[in-house]
Each structure stands twice: as structure tokens, then as C-alpha cells.
Amino acid sequence: MKIKKILFGEKVPDRDDPNYKKLREESEAAGRKVTQMTGMGKFVAKVQRFAENHQKVFLGIIFAYCFFATLIAIQRVNYLWNHRPQQSSAVERQERELGFKQLAQPEEPEGEGDEKGDENVQL
Image (cartoon, rainbow, N blue to C red; front, side):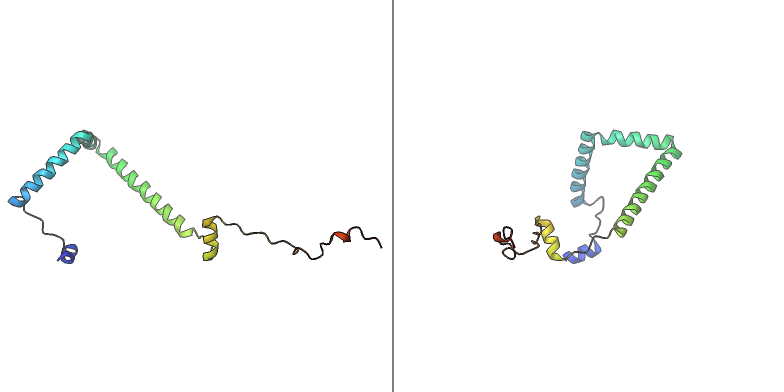
């Protein structure tokens, strides 16, 4: 039954349904309380008044916002498309994450050709 609700959705209840009426009234009261506390209703009224009085300017603002949002999205997609991280092995990535540094190998192993008497030998 849950899969059926997910795929097809739930039936929208009728406004006059007594079981739904109480839930709807509580939701509306909570919404009114939130809008009154945040002052969102006054802000929306001002925006709507501006939109009605200056229709072309308001549409220009909305279209400009949509245009710039689209440009930013295209720029981000372009960056991600062209950004190619360097290929590295799992060991290299692990070392980088854990902060390990590769130890420099000495040029000559110790003990070979490092005799103390060689410097003072005269021929």
C-alpha cells in the first residue's frame, strides 16, 4: 500500500470533508501565526503593491534575476565539466589525506665508502 501511495500519491481530500476540516483549520491557523510573527505578510503585501504599480520594472527585475541565475548555473556546470582532477592512485590519495610525506632516500647507503681513515691516508 505504501508503494502505491508513493507512486500514485494520496487522494486530495474535499474541503467539506469533516475529517479533513479540523486538520485544515489547524494548519491555516499555524500558517497565519507564523506569518504574523515574522512580518512576512507585510513584506509580501509591499512586494505585491510594487508589482501592481510598476509592472514592467517588476518583470524586468524578475527576468534579470532568472537570467543571472541561469548564467551562474551554466558557469558552474562549465567549471565542473572542464575541471579534471589529477589522476592518482588510492595509496597517493590516502597518503595525502593522512598527511604522510614520502621519506627522501639517501643517495648512498650508509657504510659503503664512508670510512674515516680515507681522508688521512697519504700516498
